[in-house]
Image (tube, rainbow, N blue to C red; front, side, top):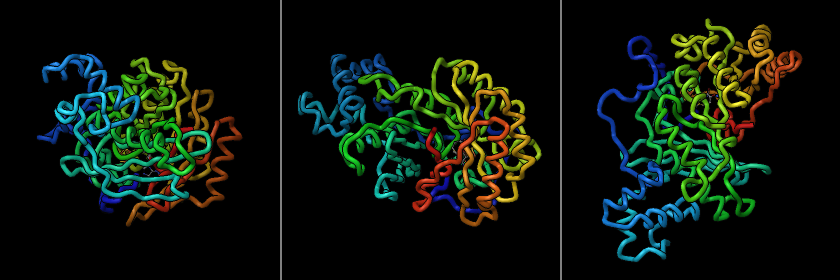
Length: 382
Ligand code: SAH
Ligand code: SF4
């Protein structure tokens, strides 16, 4: 996604021994955010309050405040003894992210927040209110190590993985803003979460999985969203896709393909040098078979690069008969980039070629481009 902070420039692509993979953020000492309620399951929360000499029901009280009532300010937790609130909150509800900047468009129904973490790392989230759903697009890492040359986040490189609670905090903020009527249209419920902000979610597997569980567990264990309303978007880390397929979750998988041929995809998505198109798609079909869920194939339309008719035909033949749906995303040019979005007529023909061959396809909503919200990139799940 486009980051307000990401410099444009040459793309650091490192493949080989240290190629992007599951442990790509484990090199060198990295900041570890403090533990938070949202990192823990119920048993872990009870153990944490026991460390403070408190009975287990205090953990349940905190959980109800945070996950059911969307309260994170200790002053509002009036059923807790006043003398205890500060101590419990300091131990289990440390404020992990501070809103540094808010940008709005679409009459306030699209809002991007730039968050500053405790170590100064910056991440973004975007809330998008539609008539039938409210989607929060969240970041899973500060930066990204995958080096896709059309993506501002990729150009900035990886700073670090976010903790589960840092991810959940972004969702919490959206759920709270909706519940409190702070988004035009009156009070409502956050319904969807897409991991399409900064970072490669499957390169931060453990935290993303914990976050998904926390987002979808019924309150007061978690925020109670439907698993089906959560989309995890990946650049195509094959082992992690296979692992995700075995988690027993009903989340949607989005695969950022962007090219049907290895020759071009090797350049657009450098991790393709490690896992080729055929292997990525095979893992995607395995995911569809395991979950019964249609996989989204993300395809950024880049003028004269990947938008030729023959590539549409090649894509259609790769997807024929599979549980798949294509999202065409007009490229949101990053500062200094030589690439731009496809001509609308070319994009329309690309779409027609897919549709004519029976491939379900839609053009991605590009909400928020005015605020650099990169909703073309962020793309609400359909
Ligand atoms: N790392 C994951 C998820 C975050 S990126 C992934 O790549 O899937 C979310 C989506 O935005 C991806 O489909 C990505 O390819 C797309 N994207 C990134 N930069 C973009 C740009 N400049 N224009 C359009 N889409 C972009
Ligand atoms: Fe950007 Fe996603 Fe590529 Fe990372 S994997 S550089 S976030 S498009």
